[in-house]
Length: 211
Image (cartoon, rainbow, N blue to C red):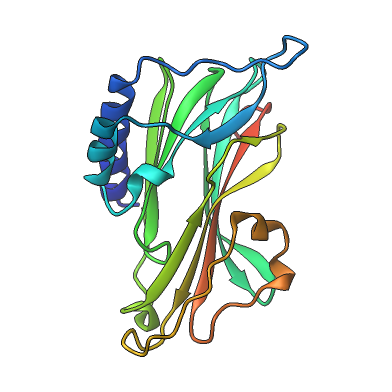
């Protein structure tokens, strides 16, 4: 496993975290902590740092809040095959804090992705890369991300990113269809573009120890 993407994401996340005073928890009406993940609100300086990683990297940084029962966090990447999501990669990290920040670093999910996770005391990063398939040597793509606060339950898989790729002629003017992240739960309703591919990234918060 190559580390380049993970190191880049880790460096930016560390810098952004250092500029952030902290993440304030949210409580329900009953006084219990609400569990959610949402796009991080970055200052202009933080956004500038995030953009050093790559295009629109600031849109791939998330804050989350959970309960003390949280023990591990999993990230998974999928590729759509005949109306079903087929796992491309997965990984997890033990995590014992109730709040934190997650950063994803990628350009083309066909090539791989880097991820970094940071709390007040805990930190971890990982990445995976694979040889770019020949048909994706030159593609047009549309990426959609989670854009608002998303409540969650433990063991629930939460879609963060969907990327649609087309290997058609970039000069033809053909439009690549975008998919909302909610489409992850309805893969049978969508089709990969002709000669293209569709990828998704999800996160799962778990009360179980890391496998």
